[in-house]
Length: 603
Image (cartoon, rainbow, N blue to C red; front, side, top):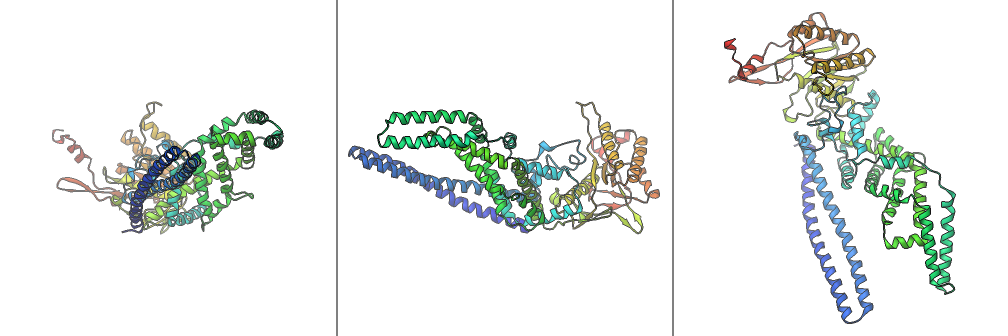
C-alpha cells in the first residue's frame, strides 16, 4: 500500500472514531440543555409560589448563565463534528484520486471551459474527467481563478520559476495535514465561491475622513456623561437625559446616513471575511522553507503592516456591525457613546490604510490554495517524477503514461531530441482506430503541462524544454457561428502557424489533421504544414491514418515514424497501446465496418 493511501485510510478511521464520540457527547449535552430549561422553569415557578422574588430572579439568572455556558460548549462540539465530516470527505477524495475515481467529484471547473484556448479543451484540463477535477481542492474564488490561470499557462514560466514552484509543491506535498486544514477552514463557512466584487470596490474607493467625525462624537459623549451625573445627583430631571439621548440618536443617524449600506455590504460578506481571515491566519502561522512560499508569505507582512492583523481588525469591526441590527443593548451604546459613528470612522480608517492591499492579500491566499491543489499530486503519487528542464530544444520520457487514467494507463518510452547528429523535431504516429494515438498525444501534452506548472509527471523519468503548447484535436461544428468542423480546424491551425511565425517556441499536437477534406488535399496540406512549422522552429507530434505521409521520414531527417498496433483473439480486436518505431502495418477499419453490419461480400 502506498504512503498516501495508507495515510488517507488511517485518517478516515480516526475521524470516524472521533465522530462516534462527538455524537455521543452532543446527544448528552442536548439532554443537559433540556434539563436546564426544565430546572429554570421549575425553580422560577417554585419561588413564584413562595413569593420570593429575589430567589426567583437569582435562579433564572444563574440558570440562563449555565445554559449559555452549556450551549457554547454544545456549539463547539457540533462544529468539531462538522469539521470531522469534512476531513473524512477530504481524505476520501484523496483515495479517489489515487484510484482514478476522481470523476465522481462534482466540481469540474466547467465555467473555465474555452474552446478557443490553445490546448485546455483538447487536453481535458477543465470539465468532465479533467485535470482540474482530479487535483482541485480550492474553496475560494481567488484560489479557483489562480488554479485556472496556472493550468491554462496564462504566463509561460521560466526555468527558474518552474524549479522554484517544484520546490514549493514538494514542500506543500509533505504538509498534507496543513493543506487539509486550509481546505476545511475555507469550506466550513460555505462562502469562498461567492462574488465579492462589491466588497473590493468598497475597499478600493477610499475617502477622506471628515473632521466632524473626529470632533463631534467626543463633544456629545461629554455632554451625555455630564447629564447622567447631573441626573444621578438630582440636579436635572430624568426627562432632560431622555432629551439628550434623543438628540444623540439624531446626531448618529445624521452622521451615519450611509451606514445602512455599509451594514448591508458587510452582513452579506461577514462569512467571507471570517473565512479569509482564518486562511490568512493559517498561512501566517506556518513556517515555510521554499523560496516561493517564503516570498508569498513575506508579501503579507510588507510595508510595516500584517495582513492577518489587519484582517482580524476588520473582522472585529464587522462583528460589531452585525450586533448593531436592532439589539437593545447596542441601542443603549449608540445613544450613550455614539458607537455607530466610531464604527463608521474606524471602517474608513481601515479602508484608507488597507483598502488597496485587500485584493493582493486575497490573491496571495488564492495562490497558496492553488499550489496546495497541485501538491496533491506530489503526495498521492510518490512513484511519479519531477521533470528536468532542458535549455536546448527537446523532450524525452521513460515509462510515460497518461496521469488521469489510473490503473488503465499504459506507459511508453518516447523522445524528440538531438542524437547522433540528428535533431528530431516531429513524431508522426500512425495506427488503426482506437489503438491509442490520440491518447498518446494527450499523454505527452498533459505531462508537458504538469512539467511547466511545477508538478510531478506520470513517468519514471521526464525531461523537456519550455514551449508554448498548441493543439488541434477536437474541432467541431459551431452552428451559432456557421462554422464547419473543417473550418474550425483551419482556424486553429492558423493560430498555431501565426504563433510559430511570431517567434514563439511552439510544441504542437495535431490529431488527424484536415480529416474534413479529400485524401489528396489532406495529404498535401499536412505535408506542407509540417514542413512550415519545422521551418519556423516548432516541434511536435502528428497522428494520422495517411500512411503515405510516413514517406517524409526518408527525406526529412527531423521526422520519425511511430505506430500503435492491434491484434485479434477469438475474432475480437485487442490493443496493447504500446508505441513502436516505424509506420503502421495493420488496419482495422474494414473489420469494424463488418461489426456494424456492412456486408463486403456484396460489393
